[in-house]
Length: 447
Ligand code: PA5
Image 1 (cartoon, rainbow, N blue to C red):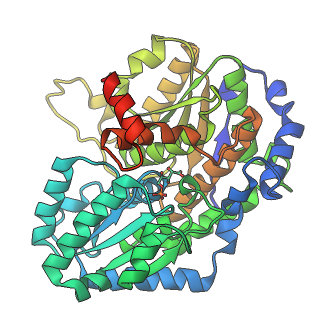
Image 2 (cartoon, rainbow, N blue to C red):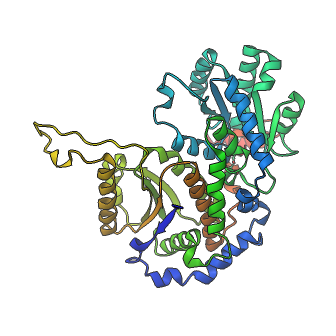
Image 3 (cartoon, rainbow, N blue to C red):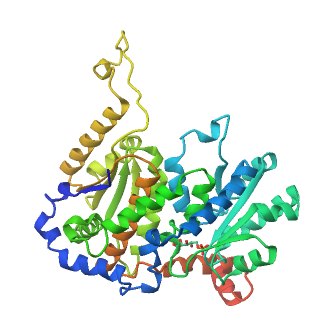
């Protein structure tokens, strides 16, 4: 079976292989602390065994609710933010036809998102479309109290009820939230919505393999069993009984840490396929929110080549030398398109006639890798055989496991996010939230 492969050879001129492999004992201990649930934040390690512990009943339940939506609506609006948004968004962007929304016939509902911003124009434009289409809503919030999705859901609930009536709206709304706590759980019980549970021991950004990710992916018509199967294989390939040298998550974690130690404090995730743009957004949240604390952590950035070679490429080649690059390289395309011959050859590119676009893309990839290494940017390469449910399951689990290892190597708790509260406090004070009177006075005086 083809599988994800990691190649770190192009960092050895910056940090020798022996140094990276010298981390073996420590990294194996960090990995065991994840699997044994003994490390920092160990009450949030439920994601480690999620792939292998998802039951047939859970999968069937998710598929049947997805089918109810698929059979009734043209659009599914997924409401959520952060970890309650990016997992599904990243997988759907990767798997969907790049021009899906423009296709005249839709086999499955189009999945769109709300509650990941508070933009008035975005919501107005969404409602304009929803006026003309049949739609359902999947509202996702683990805490059930996050402001952005809560206000977006208020709007959509009122809109759907006005459009189809309260009784029908109830059938078309599904809530994914905590088993017992939070305003969304209370509301779902009160209204009688179908609900799915986000386990207590799984944090938002590690929740793509719960109904948070699986339900929207299934509603869009993709195969969640294959997605889970890919994650199961990576769960096995990165388990504590796998030696460091055979464990890609352990090696990636060690390599990142080695980069950080030599002052490479920014990691750029690059791909040569625009379908992976949101995989990078998901990855940035995973690593940024897990590692960036106690004044430490690698800054996660991303680019899509070759487009960004004509913008950020200049900085990567010659800017501040504090970066390393991790390329997600897709080995096979789904379709073949060749470059036509042009008898006039005005652009002098006939030497490419008859060649596949992907061949040119791959040469751009290899040429860029060597140019960046020459420009003192170490290069890590993650190869996936193709973009499908199975390999995305592998890739996302690989990143999650490596993230846990990296955070333990850095000495931080991967599973909290204390820094996220600061903006919320200020926003509530500025919005005159009852109970914030003192903060309101102080903050208004500062403006
Ligand atoms: O990773 C995280 O924990 C966060 O990004 C959350 O997912 C995000 O803040 C949304 O939280 P909630 O699902 O509680 O609305």
